[in-house]
Image (tube, rainbow, N blue to C red; front, top):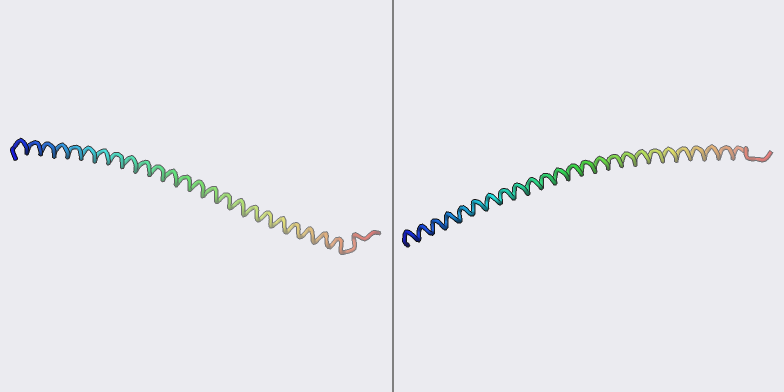
Length: 96
């Protein structure tokens, strides 16, 4: 191999090495942008989950309050039924 051929090979290798360095730099940039975009999506997703959990907790609280009110209404209805039953069973409904 002549000196000129060796020089051409070295130039080729150096050129390829420079291209690899440039390509790796571009890949690092792309990976960095993808990582940042993924992180932003995760943060947004976490905020949405927190918001959803808050709404679900409020919904559960409202359901519990509704159940308590229904239970109170059922008790009141039972008491009213008992009063009406006593009223009619005591003979107050008889004609005079």
